[in-house]
Amino acid sequence: MTINPDLQGRSYPAAEVYDVGREKIREFARAVKATHPAHFDVDAAQGLGHPDLVAPPTFAIIIAQRADAQLIEDPEAGIDFSRVVHADQRFTHHRPIFAGDRLVAELHVDGVRAMGGGAMITTRSEIFALTDGDGREPVSTTKSSILVRGEGQ
Image 1 (spheres, rainbow, N blue to C red):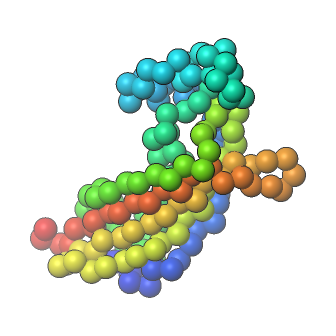
Image 2: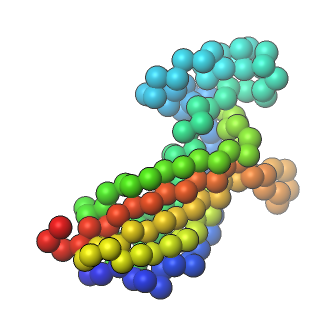
C-alpha cells in the first residue's frame, strides 16, 4: 500500500488524557540520565518556584507519540509501521511539564512528500494542559518527520 498524499492538512483531535505522575517523571529522568534534583525531589522543585516535580524537556515525546499513533493506525494513511524510520524530532516548549498535569495532544499532518517508492511525513503535535473548566494551556509543540520506506527499500 502506498502513502495517501491527501494526508497533508489532516488533523487528529486530542483524544486520551495523559495524567503526569511523579513516578513517571522520575522513571523518565532516570532513563534519559537527567540528574537535576527538580526531577526527583518535590522540595527541590518547589524551591525553584515550581508547583511539583518538573519533567525533563524530552518527556513531551510520550504524549506526542500517543498522538502519532492515531496517524499510524489510520487505515486511510497507508503506513506500514514496520517500514517507518524516525528521521527528526524537535520540541518548542511553552512551559515546563509538571507532575499533576493532565495533557492532551492534537496531531496535524503538515507535509507528505514522495521519496522514491516511499514518503517523508512531517507532523506537528500541539500539547495542552487541561485547566479548570474547559480551558487548555499550551505546553509544547513537537515536530516530527518519519520516512516510510517503499517496497524493496
